[in-house]
Amino acid sequence: MLFNRYKDDYKQVQSLGPDGKLRTVTFYDGSYYELPYDEKQFRKNKITSLIFSVLFLVIYLMAGFINPDSSKTAWIVFPYLFIFLPIAFNILAVINLFTLKLRMERAGYEASIIRMKNSSMAILVLAIINIVLDLVFIIINRHTLNFVLEISYIVLLLILIISVIAFGKKYDKMFGGVILNSN
Image 1: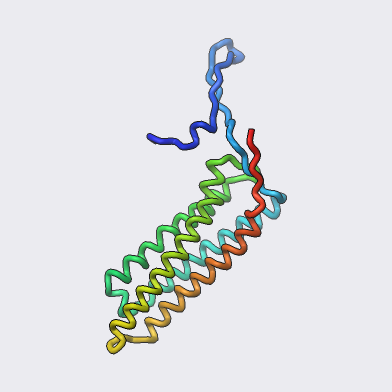
Image 2 (image 1 turned 120 degrees about the vertical axis):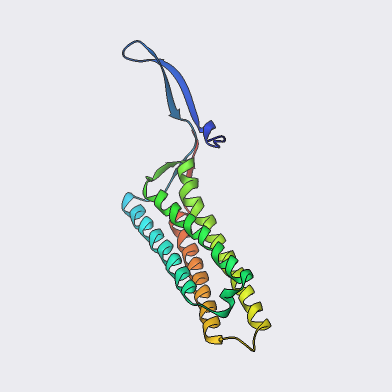
């Protein structure tokens, strides 16, 4: 990797090994993030995050299986397709979260807890943009549309938005008390 933003968090020290040879020892010297609860609660929070991530994906796929007239228009399809990226990053963040402990290094914290927050916000923004674009499409083509499919598509995106907001509220309770410990 050409650029490692966490390189300053690690220090290298030369020391003599048990065999008398000079060795380079690398240790973490950066900040630690600690969660203010026990391992059992952390496991429940991991499962809750996983459930929400899978829920986002299922709602997204359900909206994709509806084939409204607007899905044949590029300026509707592309914003819908772009929603997959933050959903994938959200799932990746949850997978990273399952590898962490209550006390985590900055890289792990940013790759899991912060990434979940940022990707959820991106899902929310892209879903809102998609709804607005679909409403514009409905207004433009109101005489030739199947309104049931269009409204079903919008309702599923609204459910996605509601689930992201619900996750945001739960996220604040789960990860709002993170304590930063500097070395």
